[in-house]
Length: 253
Length: 361
Image (tube, each protein chain N blue to C red):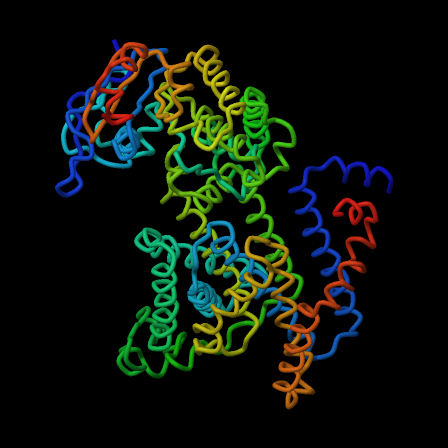
């Protein structure tokens, strides 16, 4: 059974069909790319998947379970985590605390335990800190993580911290919205290695939106190309990128 | 001493910060209590001790909403008002209880009733953001004050009587009845149980609750909602729940402050000067001037801003003149190129940490 199954998904904003007749199937462990020109509806698909928008038509199934129209919190608990095109970190919190917020629903103690500093507070906080540092180490962000504010990180590190925070929620499917936006070629190369590493070592299924063709052709196994809210091409990366329709949409006639 | 120093250096930044706050407050308490029992404080200063604690508690309670949660509330005097009147009510109907236990129960009742109000008002109000939230909390504060000004409560052998128009409308036995809340005349004869020591204990408890909450899983979630609610939602944080938690706890602590306030006055009246809009704005000024989000700053600002007008009362007639001069001097000192150059070369930071100054260049 596929991890993610989307059938005939559609959303309209007034008369604009932002996404229409959208189908997508992602198998467990796949690294899938979603590409298309600006305004094609890629981020709208992400927003539909994470419950920010409710679709007008269609069904989204995660691991066989219907999650269509659920709220963002519920969808995160079902196992979809995301990053954002324009970075959305908790700027006034430390790097460590950003990841610990991601761990929020996987560890628990009561409000009373935190106010009275009961043993469960110390025990759970210690476990959370340890797991957060393990995650940060993967992204090479563990140095001074407790004292550095997220807003003081360099741009590339902020993108990585967002991925770490998303992973901390323990997702089945990770959605990355333009992870390489604004990065230089070296940072992009490093990011590609990191994404590969996550796919392999966390056994993660990843769906990413990207404009950087080097990254897309370098790591994505399959692609879907969107244009004006509709699917233009779908399949193995090489075949899709060689498709004349795709080249036309990107480069014009 | 050396061991304390090494322990201090192993603490992380937040616990060191908290340590300074608790320690500073403890020193202030010991000094003031010492002066108080030695009889070395002026009458004016003695009268200010409890209000100072009340304002400090209000400042840290509001800081939880404004600084930590990032929502603007300008109706916190309303929660204080609810706490004051509910606790005074309790003390009035139990005149035979011993003083201290009655006062402790009264403080708890003040907190719980204010907390219930905070929770109920929070449910609809916290769906709003920014200006809208400020307007609704402002309205709440004014409504509470006006309702209490029109509220008559009395008790006789038949039980309690209420009215919103006049004493006679309560239907109470005029001879044997006892008026508890007398409309615009408020509550008179509340036992004056609030001492400096008890007020400080309540301030300490409030401080511990707020700092421990802030540095916990819940506190992180509250700050995450403040920093970016879309991202908080995307990692599964229940926004409404954590907004409500912070708002309710803040209301409870405001209720404590109200109880202390009520038991420091012979007559408790819900006048605009005590529980109105100006009071809420004053608490907000404490928070803003203390540095939004800084608990210690809120306490310091509340003390300084309450003391200065009181201590300068003898030169009251020159007030406007002094304001103008201070304003001009501050402008000159802050912006003239020469004074800026002087500050750069003579800053306290450079004086204390000589290395730090060089690194800047």
